[in-house]
Amino acid sequence: MTSGPVLSVRDLKVEFASRRGVLRALDGVSFDIGRGEVLGLVGESGAGKSLTGAAVIGLLEPPGRIVSGEVRLLGERIDALPERQMRAVRGRRIAMVFQDPLTSLNPLYTVGQQIEQTILAHLPVSRREARRRAIDLLKEVGIQGAERRADAYPHEFSGGMRQRVVLALALCAEPDLVIADEPTTALDVSVQAQIIALIRKLCLERGMAVMLITHDMGVIAETADRVAVMYAGRIVETGPVAALVGAPLHPYARGLMAAIPRLDGDRERLAQIPGAMPRLQDLPRGCAFCPRCPENFAHCHVERPELVTRGEHRVACFLYGDGLADRAGDDGAAPAPEMDGAPGEAVP
Image (cartoon, rainbow, N blue to C red):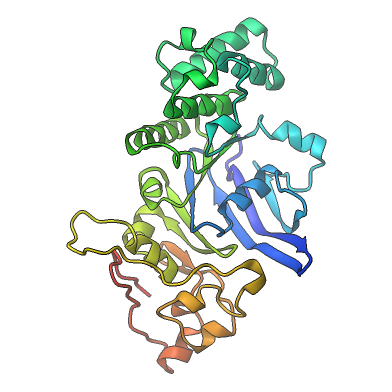
């Protein structure tokens, strides 16, 4: 068993050819996920979260393509594999859990048949053994009466139960990595909590790596070990979940935290981030968040910040890098940025 990360992504860049020219959808994305670890990938719609997952598992839709960077699974590079070899990786070593479980389940077959066929496709076992494993997996994900329910069809399950079946389907080939793309969005709050707890439990017990893609900071806070905040195709801040949720540094991350409803506050209106994420064809020259940022200054308009280390965080913002002196003077000191309603102050 390797001691390195299960998944290692380095400087990943994805482009789409269009009539307006080449659009860069992912620009230099890098992260690692260790065994038994949940990495939360968070950001607004269009930030590049799902695209990152699709690039990792090799499901980019044409004309999208990886133009540079590396994706390594247990040290083995997989981004350049031929499609035939990538199909062997997909499902066997990397599994995907989608937002709508009905997109993963065939309505014409029982859930037991679908799990059994997946096991037989990836593991050298008999049909009898595949049936036994299918029932055991349904029990593991919390399906009551698994022996009987294995012979039921997807439409006979509730939304939460279908998502549990999809988790069983994802686990049946004993993958090293599970990519969960908005797995709780279509579920009510109580069922969301159950699915979150189940993902966390399975990750710890099986030692899998999990990439959890979501826009819900509450889900991230309950499930993830580390968080990567994405904006306009780039990672703008990473760190342990407690540090990033408690005291985010990047103005965008602080805006996301401030927008979470708080039971101990007396404000009548939720905090919001003004404006909208720029379109790929209209990205500003400097920092992509600059037009919406309450802390922007001259340097932000002309140059893009790179990730720098600040304590437990890595943050791409000139408030914490070389551009700070341009704003604050020769001593390089600046007041700690603050955004109304943020749960913690940033520490330069």
